[in-house]
Length: 462
Image (cartoon, rainbow, N blue to C red; front, side, top):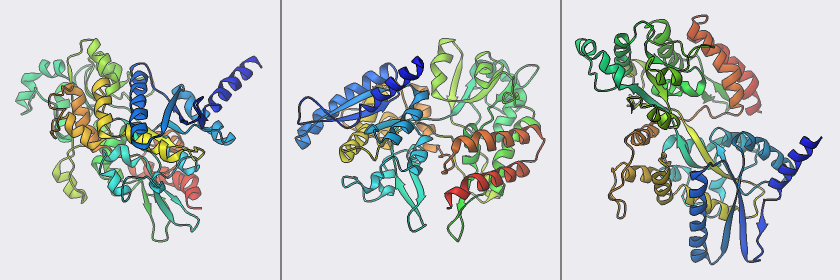
């Protein structure tokens, strides 16, 4: 009982934070639920104060951003409870996977319908951002006429993705063999055909050329390279899952072949196996997919490694599949900022999240915290592709610079609700059966598609 009362007290503390007026009656207070830690929180407070100062100067209105730090694991639960009580914050920083769910529950604002939306349409607004981080905020939902209608429900605030990590020491150890095979030991492979050839030389005894995870999120680079789409809208306006078609099967077959056919993948995805990050740290795996969150950890262990773009498929493979060749592909992680329907100050809240994703703010944020910008202009300036007064001599960590390049090839996850169910209960088990050779890729995907159509899209199409 005491624990229950404590939890309720904490929750109602959060509830009391929405739509406030300060002691100064002419000051508007916007409450923002955040999941920052340490330096991020300090930088946010600095930027929020800067916004307030600029907003008052421009609009002659005093606005204060009142931040409330919420544990990441508790955020969704707190949001659900606040929505039920209609006592939400004005703004929240949420995982990119949660924007769609909030949109389907009509909890957050359609930003493109606000009177101060600063673009002619969603497409024009999208041109300011990296495609992957922006597209997760664009959701199609049936309107009252029964037609799918697209709206923008959030703005990207922080981006993350996967890239290819490679162990330079392990490459040097077999430099002669790599050169004999016509491969350059001083660089990472640029195509999957090359990665297989590199890995054949690197794989020996307990060492493997490549190691990978098995989940939908970790598999998105394969789908992105093959232009595989999970969902299509039929002629009668219904959404159907297309897993099992030629492109989705080709995408995952490439991943399966690394383990079953070429035998250069460590089986790191199996239950009880040494995971890719641990095996890479212990110098058992020469190459893995990994995100920027482990860079510091690897550097602190004095690991001799570098980061490169995820390899492309060959132009010949792309042509045979009837798709355009892309240089790379990756997935989307990170966070977006949303505005809640219950906010009394929706337009001002939009101005703030727009400010947080602006190129000027993103440059300041990413310089200070070594993070990946979501704003296209910010990325171009930070990478030296675009010159701008005041930003001539910016020094960027070379590894973070690779991630800035990689995020440009990010693809959004399937645009349907119940993502956790689709990933954990449907696709991950079916993909594991394909990796083990128990099912063909086509059979596994057709079985997954049936479950998604029956248990998810049937509800979406109602």
